[in-house]
Amino acid sequence: MPGELIPITLFICTAALIIGIRYLSNKEKMAMIERGIDPGLRKATPMPFLSLKFGLLMIGAGLGLIIALLTTRSLLNVNLDAEKGQAVAVYFGCIFIFGGLGLVVSYVIEKKWLDQQA
Image 1 (tube, rainbow, N blue to C red):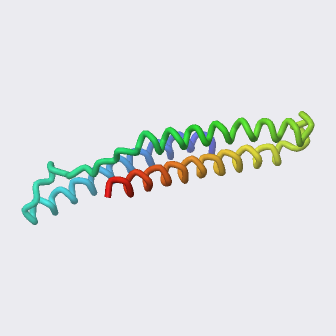
Image 2: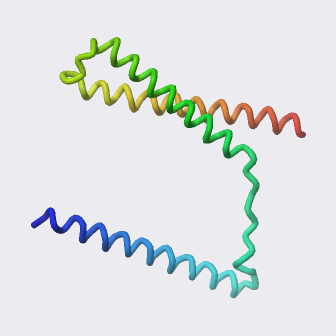
Image 3: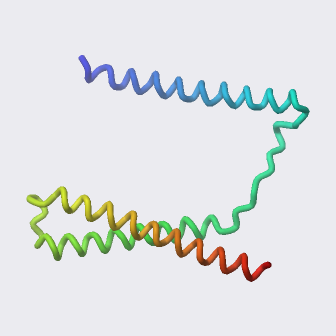
């Protein structure tokens, strides 16, 4: 019985989320119209380094996976069944550390470029 409620609950929550987002978006547009602002004209801020940021994030995550694989193979002596919890912690830790390092490198590159432009 409880297993049957999971898909029903998931469907209801997803529908409620979509309806809520549409409702709040409509309220926002109506408030903009009341203030005399055209809701169709949203100024998009340029993001010239977005692909660099995501690229370095993915490179960092990939390096994290490789380092985690090598670490678990060497430290846990290929016997991952007994130490599965530690192996998972190593994988997640390396992914986040190297992904974060990729974002820091992206920030340093953006900062240097912006300082050169000024």
